[in-house]
Image (cartoon, rainbow over all chains, first blue to last red; front, side, top):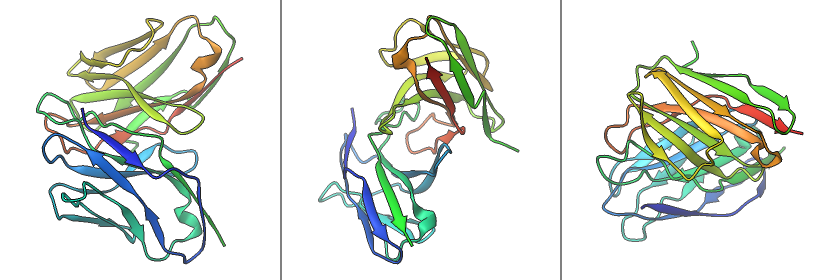
Length: 115
Length: 114
């Protein structure tokens, strides 16, 4: 099945710093790739996604580009805010039409942003 | 309106007890899931149902029994609770016939076994 390797945390940054959270994947074919975010005390929610190679997903100032040649989907933001403090999960779905969208989540990366 | 709602949000219980967590989604999705998140934030799928039929069962102990009375509900019953069952349990749903669909999560149920 598909899997991801995500940068281990925790990551601690000052407000307005540049953020990169690395994510590389192994997959059969070219599945859609996702970043989910989990704010304190809440469930996960979709942050952004890319459905094919070279696509760039973006939302709330975050971006990630689906790079087939390096099998990566790194998350970036130019200037983080305290409100971005959360746990970030990179996830590809299982390949195949019978997968029922099962997502393979890992340990996530805990981000803390200080004022 | 909450898309995926689960109850209770917090549950503290003693070892050996039996407890249930309920989940409902109003998104019209065909597929529902239970995930378990440990204290280190590691998130792992437990079960998946599609149209009330069990699709995924990820080597979960038999003490955990999901039940789906209809495609909008997926409940989780846990027998003989153990200390190691303490975790956050997330219900989720998706329209997931094809890969690439977004999964929508509930807010989680914090289970503490003492």
